[in-house]
Length: 442
Ligand SMILES: C[S@@+](CC[C@H](N)C(=O)[O-])C[C@H]1O[C@@H](n2cnc3c(N)ncnc32)[C@H](O)[C@@H]1O
Image 1 (spheres, rainbow, N blue to C red):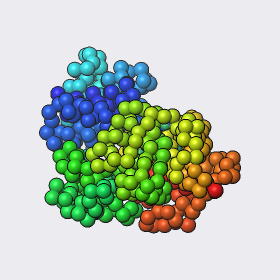
Image 2 (image 1 turned 120 degrees about the vertical axis):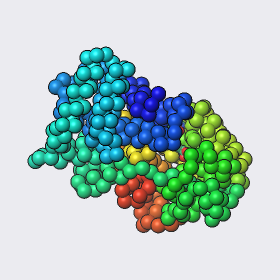
Image 3 (image 1 turned 90 degrees about the vertical axis):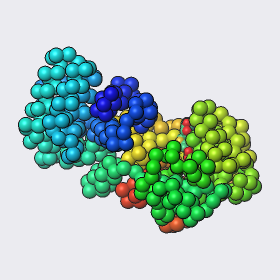
Image 4 (image 1 turned 45 degrees about the vertical axis):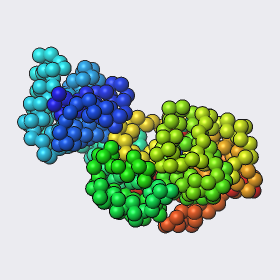
């Protein structure tokens, strides 16, 4: 199977089976023996095509006079793949994009579809001016959505909230490739020693400006070839996510509950800050995800983490006033981490921002019950939607006078802020978008 056919299979899996692009990509690349060059080509085709989403369909619709959805799904994807190569990839000759798409149509379609694919793509090559995005009066939102490959509802929302220029910057940021960032496992090494070890393993990285244990990698070999990862010298984690455990500020010997813990990025950070002394209870609603917490803890050499399958909305009844500190790293829309998941932006909807806050408040209320008097409660998310962040915290506080909001920004290790809640915006901070609020029980 050649690179384009592998890419087609993955893209089709994403579109017809709702598969995650990264999961499907990893699985298919493992199945087929491909060169490094082809691996990069497949990845670029898949991520690029999936990310471009509606923009590809809009371009296609300029060359097809019937609804795209009426075409057989696999042929839709053959066309998307072809259009992507023609309009988005400078290094692929247009003739190769057309010819190879026709070959795929021969394999997955019939004589009619072969002619159709050939005609559509050759027309696109001949008349590229038809695919110029509309940018007239009153079309600014539509234009930005198409030009920066985001759903229109999201762009509209961000323009209202941040203004046009900032909304575009945010979209542009989401279209960049996220660098790998890692957290030094301070139970086994320190950041400068880790940098030397990584350098010998061909990992080029620099120190994070956000956290004392963070490193950002500019280039690295495949993850399964980095020995220091299997040896537990570091954990893969975004810089902004590393801020949460610092804000929680757990102390050795304490009892901490991490209510939505899997796969354990923050749980293991908490345990490291406690110097592996005390007790961390890591709960989640998925057993298979808790396995990941245990695997990470074992790899990192942590003994104080205990996992438990428990719905966070029940946690307060089970552990009433028992914990010194409780973390709620809530399930959220993930609107702050869109650059990491090319398909994610197309799977979100405005309805999610109505439904999720109900669960988030319920979890926060229950988690609060588990905090001892004088203890700390931290609420965090990787979204930038106010409904899931400030609104949730304010609603909770209005109903819980026994909790007071602290100067969360003062608990950041570096770049302290004079703010009661911290909201990192990706296009400004250069990190994943993250929200953190720290509260204290009186
Ligand atoms: C943002 S992720 C947590 C990431 C994790 N804290 C880390 O740093 O690696 C949210 C987690 O909440 C879990 N979750 C969703 N609903 C839950 C509930 N009602 N109770 C407990 N966990 C829940 C999900 O399974 C998911 O693992």
